[in-house]
Image (cartoon, rainbow, N blue to C red; front, top):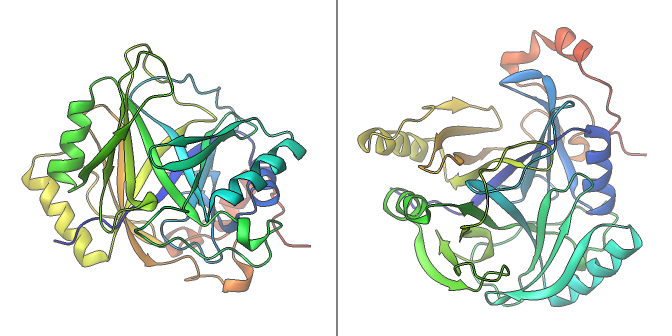
Length: 325
């Protein structure tokens, strides 16, 4: 069985799709690659952002839940999502850009062996820019040529995902013994008195293939809401490999969703022992399956199994203008 290739996507929650679209495309310069609905609740939008074509490893997605309360941050959560940039100079560009756009942000600091810049979106989503200057491993994506951010400074994909847990041994066991991640190292927590953050990697390694485990002894259980992360997905090469993973989880007696066809990729869902939702997702078929590459994200896209409900679905959604001017 092939090892997992890295981070596939991260899915978070927003209460305001129009503002979300504006922030992630106009401020961060990502491309909206798919405007669709949550296939498990078709009354809400599911927005996918990424590089020029939504390559796996570049996708940051949001479920719109209009009445969602604010996330109450705590343990047993996906507590930060990293976004990769090419080099250290890009972080200086972004710090200035955040100041110009009144985006809440921290200072440029080193975490592990990388320069990083933390920031939050308008709903408090916890995000970190990470420099790939010293990175080797899984390749990043290709920035969209119509992005408002210059290509040399653009976000090129997802970086490490941080999991904050109360009992790290249980999560680590799933990562290493079941999913095949390798221990890579550690770095000090930025919270005084807390244990070091542990780094695990898969596949070719590098920032696009890492999970960071933070043990916190001072936090309550997280309550998910807007500004929080719903799940993280890891890359499986193809559908044949996905079926092998399904059988592996069965053999280990780990409850899972089994095979799920998301049309743009094939999936498998399960919760690790601390309750964090993991997904395995195939690299294909891809987001240009039902739309031309030049017009991704401009219209409401529905997978074939929902197309016969289009009128019903559109009637319940507030219009969201994503056509390019």
